[in-house]
Every structure is written in structure tokens, then in C-alpha cells.
Image (cartoon, rainbow, N blue to C red; front, side, top):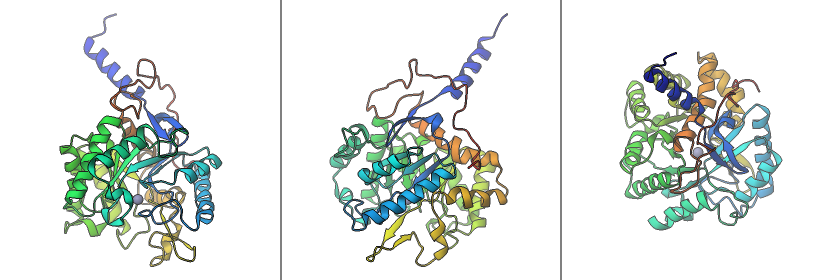
Length: 379
Ligand SMILES: [Zn+2]
């Protein structure tokens, strides 16, 4: 029987696409991308406001218990992976939390947040920040090198669409570290997602392994209408970037119909494979030790916005607005997996700076069972 070379190559290509697998660095070791499952790509495991130091905070036992409860509830509703985007995580406490909820894969970040937050990392010079990020990714967080707890993702932030020189420098360093360490990049992009993407692209970043958060926040639209904003975001997706949504019950920043319009516009424009959502759960602790969820003081309803809320509230709300289960599965499972795999093209293992190491002998592993592809609402 004669098989044309064209169809053979096509078949191999399709097969390879399915079989591409990569390893992602999580707190408790490398995780096969097929096992990421339901993934919240932008969350925080804070012990105080995320711009502050997370260690040495006065109410550490209280915040530990609070976080443990949130993580257990996340596990119980079927969440399998949480990406912790505080770029200076409290590794010791998160390690202890993860030991109590070992079913969850927790992926930690390195990098920076807004310059205005004043964290010591924001004061680092170019070489120092570069070395700091590479060390977190390749050797492990300071003090945790022997435990092998390493960063699996880079976080950077800019405040407005006119990036400052400091912000541009941070983004360029992120692109450089991404290229050398083969980890993805996530940004804080209430404003200026497209401008951020352009800075990263000019610095040689792998845009297919970048995502932009909070893009639906209307105060960051620079005067664009809803329709114009939808097109602006489609440009980012067209360039390969992922767009992250989290403003559920943040009606004051994004009315739900607008959130739906943006997601549907991306889907209908052929960019449904570039959409993520999670909650961006984060806390602050006041002087009396009371824990507040973001915006809870002014808007008590936001106190419900836990990790589990992504499944118990945000997902049913999306489905009630017409988002199919197939789309939900894509946004919560398939897209996060593809994003992480894009950072390590061809099934290459993460965190091997300059070195290309096959995840499995031959670099390709059969994926007979799409492990972890599971209905988002099973839990
Ligand atoms: Zn965040």
C-alpha cells in the first residue's frame, strides 16, 4: 500500500502535536503538562498585601490557616493546579501548605511587581534582577536550593500603557530570562496589554508563552469603547499572547455583560484558544489581624472570591451566559496546558538554561490517554 509522503507528514505532525508534552516546575517537583488539569493561572497565596514582603508578617499563623482552608476548598471542587503569581512567595509556608494539600500542584513565580510597591526586588539593578530570576528558576529560591523549590513562571508588571523605562527594562529582562530558562511569562496588565506584548516581542520573547492579566479592567482602556477594546485584545491574541480574565463580581471595574462581550469576541474571532480565567484571589491583613479579600472593604460581595469560587460561582455564571462546557474545558484545562508547553517547544524540559533536554527519551511521549482532561464542573 502506498502512502503519500504528504499525508504521512501531515499525520506525524498531527500526532506530534497531540503528543507534545513538557514538564512544569511546581513546588513539589516537575509536573507533566498532561497532569496540570483544571488550572487557575493567576492567583496568590499571600500572607499580607502582595506588594509587601510575605515573610515575617505579624499574623502568619492566622494567614496560614486561612490559606490552608482556601487551598483545601480549591482541591475539593476539582482544581488541580494553582499558579501563584506573587513574585516573592513565602516559600517556607507554601511548602508547608502544599504538604497538607499534596493533591494540588502549586507553581511559583519570580520577577517583579509594580515599582510603586517598593519591595526590595523592585530596587534591583539590571544584572542583579536578571541573576535573581535565573537563580530562582534554575537553582531554587534562596534558602530552598537543597529542597529544589524553584520558580516555574516569570511575573512582571506595568502600570499604564506608556511603559516607564523601569518597566521596559523589567520586561526586557523577563524576555531574556524566558529565552534562556524556557519558562512562560505572565504580566499585570490592567492597562496596556498590547504595548507590553510589543515590548516583550521586541526583546525576543516567545509570545505564545506570555499572558496578560486583568485586561478587562475598564479604567485601563485608554478611552477605547468596548468594541475597540475587544479588537485591541484580539491583536494580542493574534500575535500569540494569552488573555486572562478575573473580574467576576468586580462590577465596579467591569460589568459582567462587558466581560462576556470581550470573551465572546475573542472566541468568535477564532481566539478561543487564547482565553484564560481565574480569580486573582489575594488578601491584605489589617493592623488588628483581620484578613480582607481584595476590594472587600468597599465591596463586601468580593469577599467570596476564593480559588474555589472560580468553579462554584464564576463557571456557572459563564455557562448561564451561554459559554459551553467545551469552552470552559478549553479555558481552564487545555489553554493553560498549551501555554506551558509553548514555553518548552517540542517537549523540552523546563528550567534547563541554555540546555535543551528531552522531557522523555526521544522528546516525545505517547499521550494515549489525555490525562487530566476532565470536565471543569465535575468537582
Ligand atoms: Zn495578581
